[in-house]
Image (cartoon, rainbow, N blue to C red; front, side, top):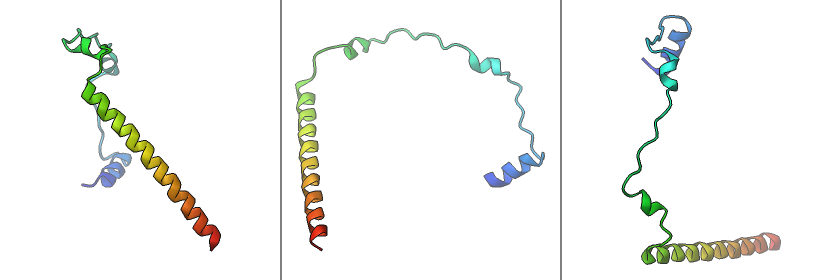
Length: 83
């Protein structure tokens, strides 16, 4: 049976989806989890030099690509204006 057929059958009353669970069961507060052993690393101010180098290279690549795209856009605009 397809989803559409199920929806139509439900709308016509052929199916009745009921649950024996109350809504109260779904609104229970979530308890705080105890800290994990690696949580102290997340607050560390030191950055791995290899990771920093990768991030710097990615930023430089993004900047270069943005400049290349801007140059292509200017060239396309010049070509369009010449036509």
